[in-house]
Amino acid sequence: MHLEVGELLPSKKQLKSQLGNYALANRFKLRVFKSDTTRYQVRCIVEDCNWRLRATKVQNSYYFQVRKFDNQHTFFTEARFPHQRQVSARVIGGHIQDKFCGHRLYKPNEIIHDMQREFGISCNYHKWYRARHITLEEVQGTPIESYSILPSYLYMLEQANLGTVTDLHTDSSNRFMYMFFCVKACIYGFLSSIRPVIAIDGTFLKDRHKGVLFVTVCMDGNDQICPIAFGVGDSETNEAWEWFLSRLHKVVGVVDDLVIVSNRKGSIRTGVEKVFPNSFYGACAVHLKRNMVGHYGRNKALKQYFRRAARVYRESQFLQRME
Image (cartoon, rainbow, N blue to C red):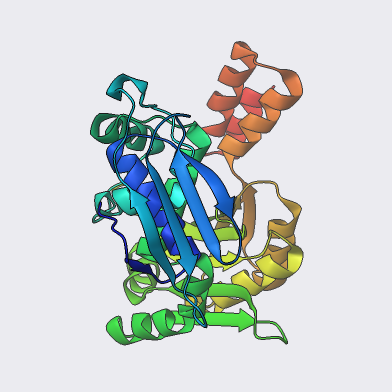
C-alpha cells in the first residue's frame, strides 16, 4: 500500500479508506488530529512518534491531496497494536473480496483466522460479520438490485426452459409483492409419473427485507423429494397463500384423488379449501408430533404410540392403535 506527497484521492472517504489500508498493511494505529470538510490530519497513536500525514481538499472539487507525509515511525515495532480502529469493515472487505470465488461460503471465523495470519490484527466478531456482508453485496449485488432484475430472470427462465410457468405480482407502486415459478420438467414429472400427493410449506427468508419462501414438493418412486413449484411473498397471509396456490392450480390443473399435506397453519388450509376444494387436506405427521411434544412434553412412550399410529395405511389399523 503506497502513499506519497502530492497524491490525489477522489474523496475524503477514499482518503480514509486508503489510510486504513495503509495502517493495516504496516500494522500500526492512527489518531485523527484534525478533520473537517477541507482538511484531514492523522498521526501515529504513539505520542512521541514522528509519523503523520496531512491532506487538504482541492479547491472547487471533491479531491483531497496529500500535502505533507512524514513516513518514518520513531517507536519500537513491539509497540505496534493488534487491534485496529482504522480498519473498518469496508477496508477488511477490500482485502477478502477475492476469497468469495465461486460458491464458496467464506465464514466470519475464517476471515478472523486469515486476517490474523496475514496482518496480525484482531477485531470484534461483529466487524468481521459486517465485512463479510459488505463484500457479499459488492460481489453478488444488493437484494434491491436482485429484485429489480427479477422480471428479466423469469423471462430468461421461460426462454431457456420452454413450458416453464412464471408469474410476478407487484402493487400499485410497482413494488414487489409475490413471485411464482415452476420449471417444465417438474410439471411433466409430477403429472406423468408421480403419485398425486404434494407437500406444501413456507419458510422465512433471512435477508434484510425478510419475506417467505413458498415451496411445493412431491416424492418420486425412489422416495426422493422432487420439487414442483417455488414462490416468494411478504408473509404467510391468507392472501399470499391463495395467490401462490391459484398459480399452482393453473399449472397442475384438476388432479384426481389429489392429496395435499402441510402443517396445521390456518392460512394454508384456507387457501387449499378455496383453490383445491376437491382435494384431501392432511396434516404432516412431523409437525403434529412437534405440536404434541410442545403440548405434552418429551414423553418417549407417547411419541412411540404416535409413530406407530402414523405409519399404518388402513383406517381399522389406525383406530386400533389409537385405542
